Image 1 (cartoon, rainbow, N blue to C red):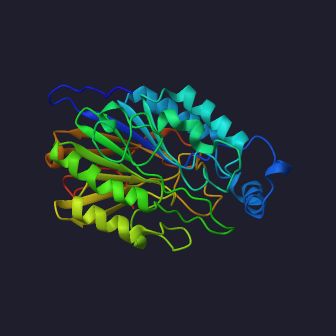
Image 2: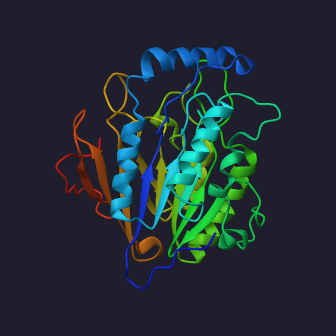
Length: 329
């Protein structure tokens, strides 16, 4: 993967979407039958199926392509029950969307839903989750060409740092965890990128702060991640999971970190009872490092069945100013 090169003051534009929950096209194979998957399948059939729309995801992707971002980040939950058939379909979806040079992916809890034996799982998406040549040369715990997290990809003056919070969980639990290896590797990555003057954008599926969701749905080692972020800083954290549009601020030693959550890209109605209508964000970066300007432009559904429109616009360098018709919640 080669880094995107941007000249001088030319903005770099990153499109961010999450939780598309691509529709299931088949049933639940007996060979993959578990209690968790059975409950999840029933939840899909009788609750989620009417709320999520693959057609809406396709419309958002078409809108993304019209705006020609430099890169696309997908922060997990591409699928629903972590089935091999779903993983294969999502691989085809990613291949149609673009190459690993154009798209970065991190897994969510629905992508790593339950334990598999002798199946590659999300390794099918490895081309979208590998560190690029720059990331491999950082001298961190990342090795050249290895599948591992955190991964680092450089896009001009922006560095994407991908974390994997997806772990198999028992029924009725949607929690995540980073684990010791990622938490040990992340500080040196953040520090080295800061020394290079790069804009550090952390990608994670689960909300990174414990207060952002319930314990049953949250990041188990959120306190440890918060401690790392407070000490080493970042210019932006992007996440999904909650299916809502949120902007939270975390004070670090180098300034306040905006933490931007986003609705499910597949949410086409309010039938599920939780979450905002489908959208994606265009994130425009100007400048370098901690002095970087960050503008977020939300695009998606303003109403059920409506067109894809601009929903809101926020300059994250001006914390209290909102230049939009609709405010982020």
